[in-house]
Length: 411
Image (cartoon, rainbow, N blue to C red; front, side, top):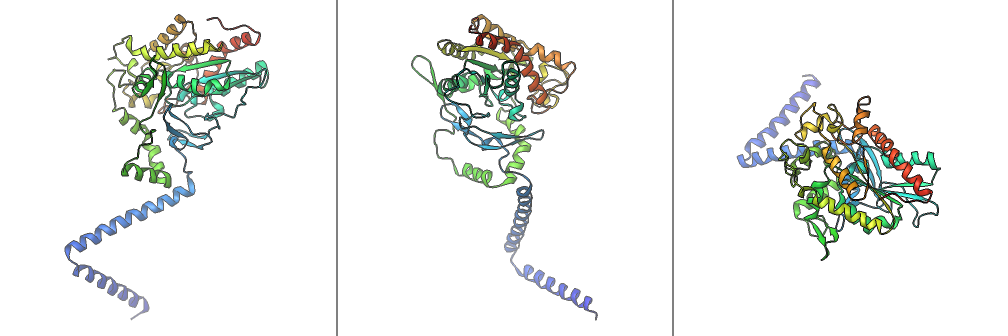
């Protein structure tokens, strides 16, 4: 017998012996062994994937590494946090300042001779999908530096995803005014009416109706249940969890809103653009109330106030937001009305607030430039942010020049 035949024969003998032992086990023991082998194989495979991801992917690739629930502002950036925000479309870096801004550090008190603009807004202002220096706030700052000189005009980006006038009022009164802005620009989003209705249910008010805070449900120090603790442990200590979460996050957002296409603004954040929406004045009541409160707060301090409105991709071109619009129940190849933005513009002007409406400018640009929006995520790509900065500059630059010459905005 050759040596190779001996090895084969020996291996077969060992395998037969093992198989014989398994056969001698009781049926429940055999089933248990099979379960253990399956679980062990799965854990081994997951371990291999985890090792590969640890070698190729940073841990902090989701927003929850630099955004935290808050007892006053509902949620906020974590001062000093860093991380990356990844999706299937983009991979951007986040560096949060000591003041909790996705921006650089700003001197407090403000340097003499500096004109400071404070930008309030949600994820479009924050710069969802672009780098911090690509946001329209930073683009506008560069443009104004070319007109008035480097450092003469500062633009502070205080945008935070899912903020709306209620949270913006709270941020302004709790933190924003400490930056001593000369001008505040509130960028009103199409979903803000929905958000204000939602946050107002969580808010605390003084006896005379002044908002005091809007706590996130998990910001009050409640002890989380065991399943939440397990999830948080996995989230903090594995790459695989975040790798999967990046790829399903959009669908989880749809689940959170229960795929609601009802046209009811209390439950459907895009209700105002649906064919089954029936407008009522009460839909705007809360947003309009908070805008007036911001106006009065700033007016009493001689700080200029501007409300800016801008369009979503499906309001700009039939080609924009092609993937996301289908996900959220909107018709492909359809150009939707900008009537909600027009309403806020009219409301602002009727109440002595300077207003900017970017809708027509974006539609004009979209005739020759495509794409301006991420097709799935729906926020502006870098080119869209640049268009927003160019449109804002047309209105803001002469107002800044007027203030620098010593006159105030007409209210």
